[in-house]
Length: 57
Image (cartoon, rainbow, N blue to C red; front, side):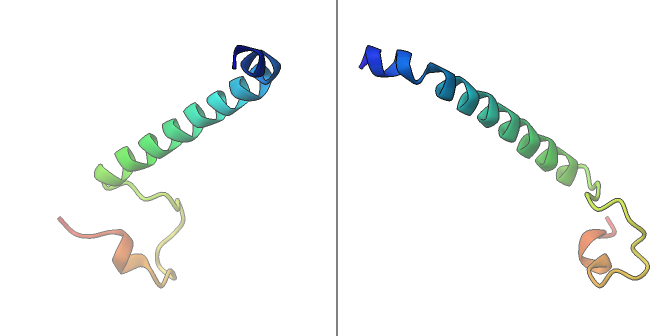
């Protein structure tokens, strides 16, 4: 088992880094959603989803 880990250490490290990056992105998106921030960044005048994105509190 230790031999397999040593042979694949580079792949394991890359996968771990990617997992951390994806986790941080998801946490950031959830935090923004809870704060009511939109992710599109566009003008909502012509957007068919404008009433679904920005709820009045």
